[in-house]
Length: 300
Image (cartoon, rainbow, N blue to C red):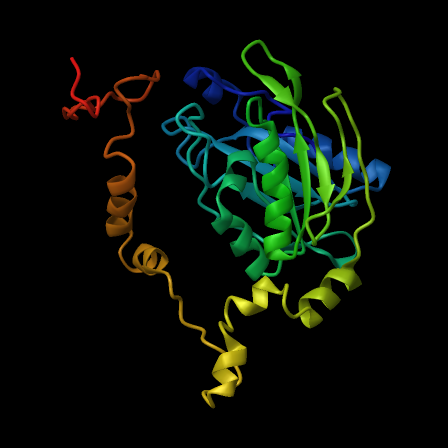
């Protein structure tokens, strides 16, 4: 598993994005496929980026490919949540994907900033993923948070996690490394430091994770979420399945009325993609005037 940006690098210039974007399959994936076949291993490779269907009119995708030990592409994932406002990739349109991986383990892939949203982990897990692979190009000062989030999401979703992070300095950012393999109970199985070209490995148990999901009780989040309060429901004589309905207003709104859910987000954050106090190239500054906050004592 290689980090995000490890093939083409990070792109700050839009024209460079178009000039270097590749097709999948294409020469790069053919090269990676040949390497996997010759060595008898599976591989995950980052392609920044993949040509859009309307190339060169629209920005490329930030894409991963999972290639098996026969050199075949068995999964292609496009980053759903680009790291805005810096990344200009077109948001992915393939959703999350679950594919049978080595020895039958069910595998999903996500990319870097995707992993900051618990929804994507839960989606992968509920669709059957037993291993979530997260290549990333994450930099300081977010080291502690990013090491922790993969452990927490492994625990919350009873899923193995494999993180491959960049390391070193690229002239703009310093990447903190700490690539890791995390067990489905949230405990680290192997972790690199900040060194360049670090390698880690661990054994993952297919029978172990499937047994835990089938038989764990108090720590079985995937079961309990959709069988809410089953102990009390059964005691009340109201069935043996608990409550399946979603109790969360925001998620119900997001599914039924996404624009209204967007307004809910804006009500607790802001109404525009640009921020006047910190303009970013390529992002429009707010057109509307937003009242400035004043000191609570109204000092001038």
